Image (cartoon, rainbow, N blue to C red; front, top):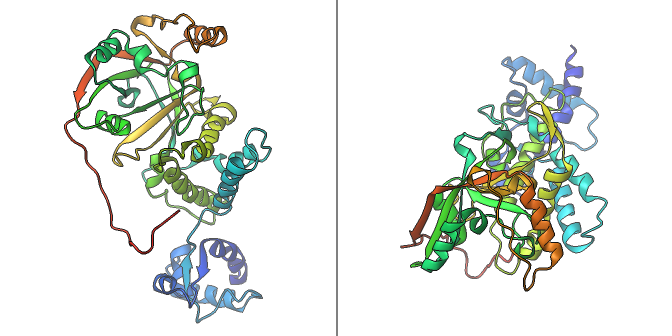
Amino acid sequence: MPIGAVAQIVDPVLRGLYRVASHDDTRSLDDGSPLAPVLGDLTQAEDDRIIEALAGALESANDREAFYGADRLYALQPDSSGEHLPNWQAFQRSLMFTSRFFNPDAEQVLNEIFRGVQQLRDADRRGPVYMIEPGMDDALIHRARIANAPEEAQRIRANPAQELGPPPEHLRKAGRLNPSGIQAFYGAFDLPTCIAELRPSVGGRVMSAQFALTRPICVLDTTRFANNPRGVNYFAPGALARARQWHFMKTFMAEIARPVFPGDEHLHYLPTQAVAEFLNRRFQISFAGAKRGIDAVIFRSAQRPEGRNIVILGDAAIVGMPGGAKPRVPEAGHGQDWLDQAAQQVRAEKPAGLIAVPETLRWTLITGAQFTSEEVLADAPDTN
């Protein structure tokens, strides 16, 4: 193949991954490299003569933007996520400040962002989408409630499925991945993380139990985007798009785990709530031999960064009693009308996706708390 034809293949890939380091940007100059080493890393060519010929072909091409030059240094793009990040930011602004309930652009943006996510792989060839089957280690999930009084603990012990499971429809508060009233099961894969997420007071008590999956669920594990992606041949069809998607997912992983100050949840949770409903109700992938949506999202704990949380969505979040017994449906009372009671009855008739494991019940005394901090400039507060 003529070197000019090779240059035409390399040019769009290099422009997509690198930028010319600005002379006004000291950091970029420190990180930048001349064209020849960049081409060597990108093409993995071992013959310096080929690299020199390719650099010459690029520099001599009709380059109106003066992207190539012997005196130029090249640095990786600070954001290698392509259009995903600006699309996500526009989606956030639109949902929070423009159109919330009838937003024709939202689903299109989310489809573009998550399309093919099940095909991504990290350096260990692990995908972010996988199945959790009953009996696996991750099929046991911790959930807890603050229970300072003995009578509270006894009530939970008598009916852990009802007392530790998702509350009735009229009592469900908005969470990171569910709007008010919508069912979701929040849990953690270890007890310390589960307790940390509650943020209990020192001297208080927490009642916890494990819940076991009764059927397989399809999960999106955002913590896997903390790893490096699988080695990419950027010249393979679709490879650059997958690399950009992985880089964006790193941003999304941080977004979904970002701490939110009390009082700001109603606004800042909106984008991630919309994503969860989209993934569970609208998104469809061919995976594990079937067309399916995402039943659960795994994300890093904001309170204990080494821990992992899981949110189980939709019908997979229905909690049952051991042995297949149905949860008790309370009589309608103050603040609860017949429609809400009917909805609970329908939920009780659906098969449970989780069952409480009574022998794992624990009443835990909180004896201390740990906090990490870092110094910030007093004269330059970060208001973002």
